[in-house]
Amino acid sequence: MPDTAANPSHDTDLFEPVQVGPYRLANRIVMSAMTRNHSPDEIPGRLNAEYYAQRATAGLIIAESTAISEQGLGWRNSPGIYSAAQIEGWRGVTAAVHRAGGRIFLQLWHCGRGSHYRARPGNQLPVAPSALQSPGHIVTPNGREQCSMPRALDLAEIPGVIGQFRQAAANALAAGFDGVEIHAANGYLLDQFLQDATNHRADRYGGSIENRCRLLWEVAEAVTGVWGASRVGVHISPANVHHGISDREPDRLFGAVAEGLNRFGLAYLNVVEGATDPVDRELPFDWDRLRRLYRGTYIANNKFDLARAKEARRRNHADLISFGRLFIANPDLVERFRLGGPLNELNRAKISSPDHTGYTDYPFLSAR
Ligand SMILES: Cc1cc2nc3c(=O)[nH]c(=O)nc-3n(C[C@H](O)[C@H](O)[C@H](O)COP(=O)(O)O)c2cc1C
Image (tube, rainbow, N blue to C red; front, side, top):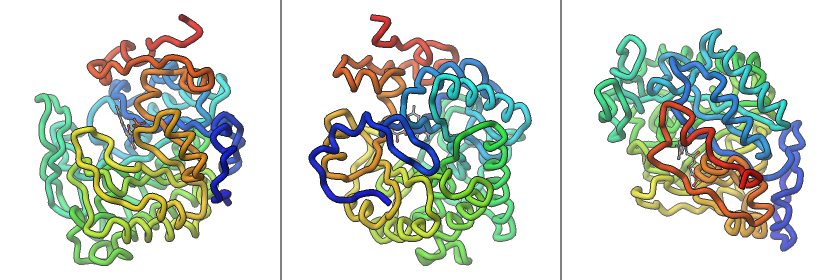
């Protein structure tokens, strides 16, 4: 149970060990999940292992969104966890991170409508709660294209989706991860079920908040059934309009999500606090209320720097802080923060380069 009182000494404890589930993490600095499209044929390999091992001084690494099935794959060269070759590839990644002294969770991802049939095995249509097209764009063999119109999932197909999450969780266990994070954020399938702009269903998975949360509860049951709750986290983004997602009552919806998740006793709730893309508008949301409603370990994410992270700890707004873009450019982010060292600039043009440039070639402070 986290200590929720403000404490002025907390700003120094970012660099101190913290218990999360069964793990004593080295610090409160988490590397956020980030798709990098560096897994040819959706199979992670040695380059991915090197990239994550370089960042193993994070208290916890959350590996990038990883497709739970062919149906859940958003686009090519982002990894999956549904084939023997993918499990073997991930084994190399987890072993490298463990050799470097780190801890690594896998983010379990179903893209839902956030895809295009041309980017998918067999050109199958993406699936979603409702046949509503995402305004988002992805890279297909034809270049950058708007996501295609999805097919609404039949009620009879939903147990199959839950089964995909269960199997992917078991595969992640076999691949040597320390835990998994259920991706219910950023406008992908589980988020599409939660929020009313994307869920127009009239069955038991649509309509009321209770119904829209149902798939998340069932997936959480399935995944915690494999891992035990203390090694499972959940990722939500109540105010991120990524992929055209929104809800008329976000405080009420995500308050219900936080309260519903309390009963599981999860490793953590990881919250994207706001819009991640600088061009997206910031929607109003009461983050402190969400923090209070959730009774387990709370990880805050989005546009944090060291000063904001210390402030969040001082106010006890979060137990841990997760960093995305700063970790792309700074493999030794923890050390740089600790020493107050300079930060490398993110090379945006190289975020999805097919080779090691902009991936494993960012310099360490010790190399200066
Ligand atoms: C290149 C890139 C890829 C991302 N991929 C994912 C992803 O796979 N899963 C996810 O939940 N969030 C993803 N995000 C969002 C980040 O995890 C994070 O929430 C966001 O960048 C805000 O944190 P930051 O301001 O510290 O970067 C991605 C962000 C970036 C920049």
